Picture 1 (cartoon, helix red, strand yellow):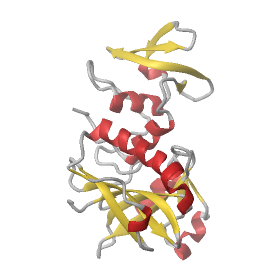
Picture 2 (tube, helix red, strand yellow):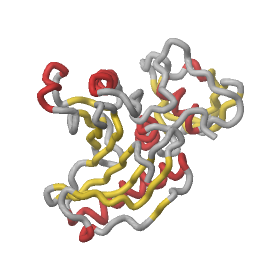
Picture 3 (spheres, helix red, strand yellow):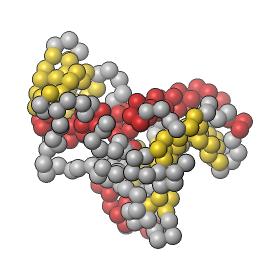
Picture 4 (spheres, helix red, strand yellow):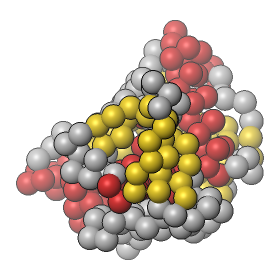
Length: 248
């Protein structure tokens, strides 16, 4: 069982590097190399290079993103110790260090500090726009960029974080969109196990404008649910991954 709850931060990190070989970096990210993860034992990580040569190194010599990737995706065996003094991911994090209950100012500060998203509005102008669609993933996930939207309770606490893909035409619904949807489904299952509720991916004809239909639901250990589905917005279609405080 994972020592920390997997967050959207980790979903993105894994999807971007969800091939057999991934790019690894040293601690200050000045050097990179391509290798396949093999194992970890007593904080010694073994990897296989593309020339099939195996290398072993201390996990503390890897960049924090790589340390977290190993810690969450391969926790079996000895306990992994992430470098002290480096940014830690909250065990209840939904995106980077964003958690249920954070107020708007806290969410804003955390996302501007995140290395996973970029903002299209300067911090000084954020009050005029609201947070929805201000932040988007820096890297494409399964060929598409995802924007963040949020839900709040009456006290201003965060109750929901959603990733919404870029708009796809009806003609691409069963190609580009379905391919990305399947990749998300496979990864979420590998982390959380089988969903508690599952149906087929919604048909484009089943969706109405401004509507999301969830096809799969997972329960979060800290309370709440993950919903994977598709949505229709202004005649175009999106994949939506929603982390919500509600138990579905």
